[in-house]
Image (cartoon, rainbow, N blue to C red):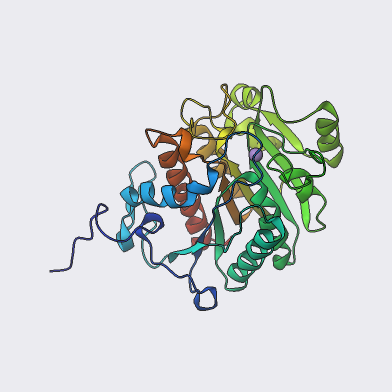
Length: 315
Ligand SMILES: [Mn+2]
């Protein structure tokens, strides 16, 4: 008899998917990669523990080659022949941005060259800077969709230009990065009026969590720039802190699961998801593991969208 390979058993990779730590050998549709750093966080650290802890939580949702039946859509999802692999973690060095970011960019470029869609687990939000940089490998303009409580357009904190409040500003400076939309903004953020002014001047579409609620998913989608390629950068603090307490900068008044999934579903119909990252999960402040579960399932939701795109003309 074939082993049952139940979720509680086995070695811990994301979703119990096969492990491939030698990117030269990568043969996959979707490649998961961790970046365990939190050196860019100014207050509550711990996001460096997220990739390993998300992996552990995600094993509960491991369904192997069978995938799972999504009764709402009537579809079997994440089943073979779709190939999802866990590429382990980028070689990082705490406190050394140059070393770490260079390795992130190189690894993500390699994944793209191998024809897989990279889905990155942070780490704090600074890691979107080298992930965004790696997207130049595509040779096409990329639209960035950010889910976040915070604007992340801080130019610098003292001499620091690569903090976790700066990824959108840094990406805006990259030639291959095109339009942006930022969804879930609210409250006492990390940004000044001048940062909001600069984001608007760049052309970024800013949608507060309150506005997203008021105009609904269709209203949000109508405001999102039409693009060929989308990079989803999912800061877990875009979610309401009642469902995502395990973050470095929690805020009430945020987005909810179905809402964010529905927005992503709509984006996936507009253009190709070429990369995604999920950042800022902080297991230190997540005693029940609720945030780890939310992160795991968000990543799997993104996988399902990438799978759909592979099955249609966008793949
Ligand atoms: Mn952020």
